[in-house]
Length: 258
Ligand code: ADE
Image (cartoon, rainbow, N blue to C red; front, side, top):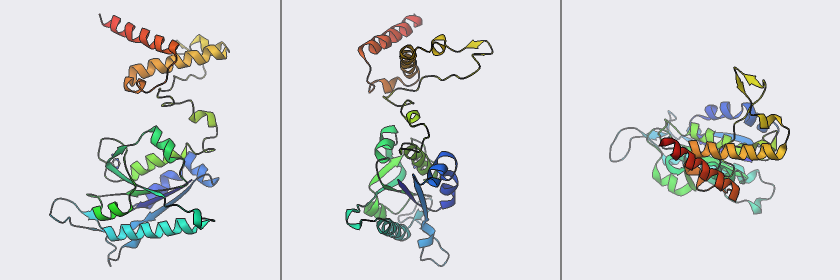
């Protein structure tokens, strides 16, 4: 899977994504990163890419032309890199913006199936609307707060998507049994020592009884989701027995209140 980023700060993206698990995935060729500097496509003699907003108002707006040219260069580069030009399809262009759909695990899973993804990072008061209309296919936010630019959100999304690419995580199972699988939070984990400052690891985890351990972890995941993110339970798939367990939890909690 190839990640492409249109940005004013390519080194920010490169430094982060070339590190740790994503860095190793790049070295082994499972993913690639190509950060393109929008400033390289400025026609201005001082390499400026922003200007005052028409109609007035605070801040500066990134101009359409350098963004359009950087995109054109990138799209051509992606096309030329394909062995079979006839099967080439235009990659999705994600504009990273607080005005977009809020990113989640399902979106990460869906995007991880793409061969190429282009992220467009804004700064200042945004990017001239006309070029956004021309090239953007998806508007995505990472949450209801405003950051100084799109680079951090792009990095967050690249990390979440990259780890779902087969082979990126050394233990493939670890991306399956974790928070948000089945819309449940992950069960708690323990490692040695067996007793830490008087707190003992739950006995069942030492029993070696795999079915019991599995059932215990499911219950822990359900209880934790109920406590911390009850909104997720609406879309989780629970067995009849698990539903009964959840009902008991809810009843117990309400009972405790009185
Ligand atoms: N740019 C600035 N804030 C953002 C956010 N919360 N999500 C995506 N892009 C952004």
